[in-house]
Image 1 (cartoon, one colour):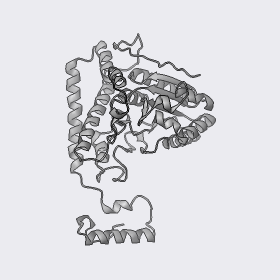
Image 2 (cartoon, helix red, strand yellow; image 1 turned 180 degrees about the horizontal axis):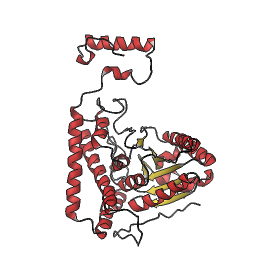
Image 3 (tube, one colour; image 1 turned 30 degrees about the horizontal axis):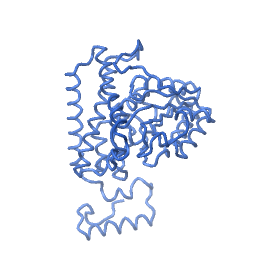
Image 4 (cartoon, helix red, strand yellow; image 1 turned 45 degrees about the vertical axis):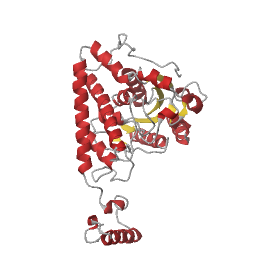
Length: 372
């Protein structure tokens, strides 16, 4: 069964129609704080890119409720297979902003040792956060494979894989959905339908009634949810996670939302997004909407919001300053973490690289000795 009308919990005025998410005040504020961290991290990364201090970033503005709502439904033992527009999933699970900034600068403390583009995070603690990949859809089969392993091992874990509307046109989407349906593995497919795949609108991306409806052909139930409603996203991801843990197989969730910035910092959305559409979705900004809900719960005031936003901006700014001062990865990291024993031909290349660096006056090459 697939629903096509976006399901809501929080109305535009902040009321939740009697729905109780079962979250404490601290847990609700944790969700709110994570959304503010996303917006602060986003803003600082844009400024860093525009000033030439990092090469690239992916705007997340407008998608925060989908990211954080989904992440809040997972246990720390679960696995996240994120898209490149999922800052909130890492931040909600207490990945320190400075660890993310190390990747943005590609410095020596970057978990990928500078081998990935900015925004391509990967963490094993405090949650399993699978390495982000630029090609769309390639991580869906990976998530299904991991979920299959969980099932075979008898683990009580779930894999959640997040992707954009454009990702549904990839072969990885077909392969992942097909095998997930056949094997009934514990995986949740989260389609962030932000209306635009770079410059391609959803109306030109698919002829289906919804992206969630695509699950029918694979025997995978689907649901469409208001992606700017944090509690609605959380509610339906929780339901999908419970199904998966109970051995009932995968679910596809389409979260209807909108990116209020470009596809990346290399993109000018004003060239293709109609001004009226942007204005309409700006009025649906998920953060003010959640603030209204929190105010109705008696735990938010404008002063609270200003204080928490400043804390988020200060933390992310400090993270950027710290990461900027970390030196670049050592030359040997080009060759490390691949082989347990470095093959002779790789060793020769390493020795030649260090010798060249030494002759060119690169202090990082030391005496020109290859250290591996």
